[in-house]
Image (cartoon, rainbow, N blue to C red):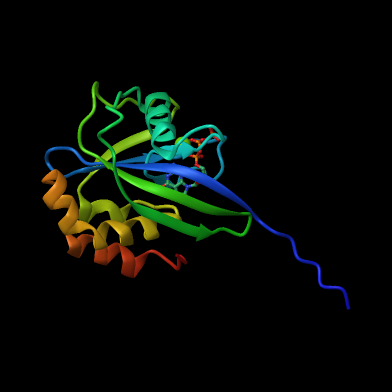
Length: 167
Ligand SMILES: Nc1nc2c([nH]c(=O)n2[C@@H]2O[C@H](COP(=O)(O)OP(=O)(O)OP(=O)(O)O)[C@@H](O)[C@H]2O)c(=O)[nH]1
Ligand SMILES: [Mg+2]
């Protein structure tokens, strides 16, 4: 018997977790016409072949939100992987706490500044559970480095309730 395997492509995505000075996190609802419309996610997008993850992050946040970030500012927290049936999502995840201009929904997306405890009431993409797991693991680091509190309890709640990622 011949075994047919189809390898899924890996999509490399730079993800930005923006946290404001009252500890709210920016999430965006994917617009109609893009994959997974209606789901909520952290801003960011695909890394082009010639870009570093940080360069991709700054470009995507400029294109999607109209904000500018100092290239030295984003803090890399780690990498998250999630296997969708169609592709493998692979993402360096950055924290940002400082930017110029107010984030605007430049791509027709809805934007919300959500309290960490409220994140669960949004329909997050499955891969976002891995991102929340990383945030939970790095809570102390984020508090120390950037003086932001994303509350371990709230991340635990999300991790318990959003289904099934692999890392
Ligand atoms: N930006 C972002 N993408 C995510 C997250 N979680 C997740 O599964 N993805 C998936 O990663 C894939 C690529 O992200 P994207 O659609 O933002 O890429 P992009 O901004 O370059 O979009 P484009 O190709 O339409 O220009 C999408 O299929 C998206 O659903 C997340 O938290 N943030
Ligand atoms: Mg995007």
